[in-house]
Length: 182
Image (cartoon, rainbow, N blue to C red; front, side):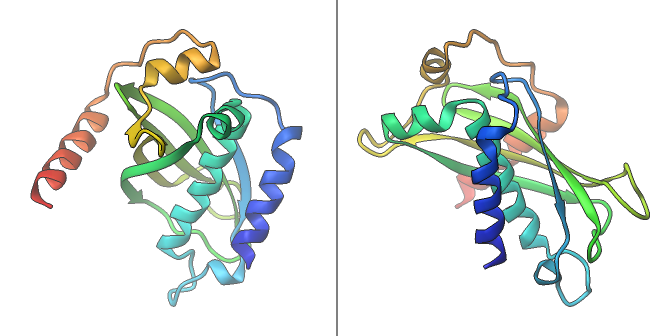
């Protein structure tokens, strides 16, 4: 129930948060570790990180104005791959900030960087978790991922992708290797 409540809170608040300019602006949301976020080690469960990142991507999509366009075109956000690096634990009632930004794109997919930064208590300001995720918008009617050029036209944005960093290249190579093996 907690996750639905959090999603509802961020959904209701999105129209009141500042609009983000696609595709380069950073979404920042602050959360607090709650009791039902904990695992048996009494720190935030690794699965909960991914769920919180879902809420952050939803915020990014809403605040860039893409949610309305996606709905009208029948597009759905879909993740294809994720790589997460846990650096420091998050404890009960500790607050943290989730930062999400688009760091690279090509043809039909984006790579988004997700960073959870400790916002209170021991380790304030330190990076707790970093993740790269590959995703795009999928059009059910035509059974295809929507080309990035088309998304940019819909948003009236002209931009070129930043060059892929070594981390992004390694992430994409690992994803291709896993894709071939499955």
